[in-house]
Image 1: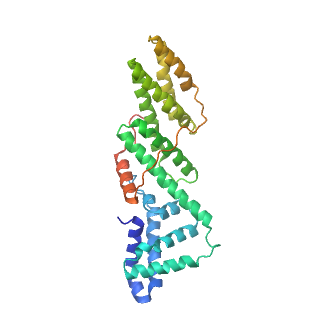
Image 2 (image 1 turned 90 degrees about the horizontal axis):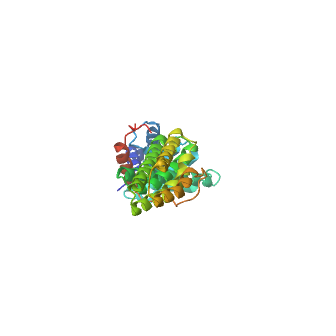
Image 3 (image 1 turned 180 degrees about the vertical axis):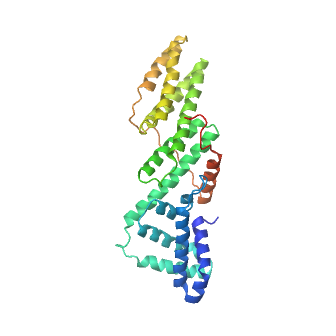
Length: 307
């Protein structure tokens, strides 16, 4: 399937046909590249609904919104017009050759290639962050909370890092924070119910879930500038487990609880590496945009529980 970039370039070349026929390939190239830049600039200035994110379709929209240097944007657009996949008809092929010649004429001091690479790496990070978030949200909706947690944690961390460098470099932090927090609470509820069952295997599985997943991840929940909703969520979790201290239970359960509680109560806010980020599949731009739109359409923007 043709990428949105390629679709836009072919449409722009189509709109330059009259200029191309009258004045030749170079004039046609200038008309086409100006047409495509104007289209992308308009997309960057729009306020689309949550399910539509033009940054996922076009790196240049991301660059414009993130205030990348003009030279970075110009070179990126020029490289798109120089794509060899444009050689399927004579007009596209001739305009592609003009773009390739223009690329070769760019002097080393005209575009800082290290800066160019940094901006493209930033865009790749944005796409990877989007993938982490949407996979985490899909798993959350499927009630696969254990699998969802790491995606939401890493998606949230990477997103915070992106928006710290500019508000248009990431996604809605409040939305991601909400589902990350809800995932913690649902896993805590699951582990607590297992512990309450009193069955040896269930108790073991519940405490394993807490020790191996929840407790190591809590510093990340507590480190985000100490958001009040996150603090309340952590206190809810701790109170749930502390409430068992006053209840009658088998000595072995009492012992396990006594061993576990200090870990829950004393977890440091120092974030330690506890797991590698989840491995991401390869998404085409079309699939990424489609899945992003689907998950955003399905989410409630105003959670009813107020957390």
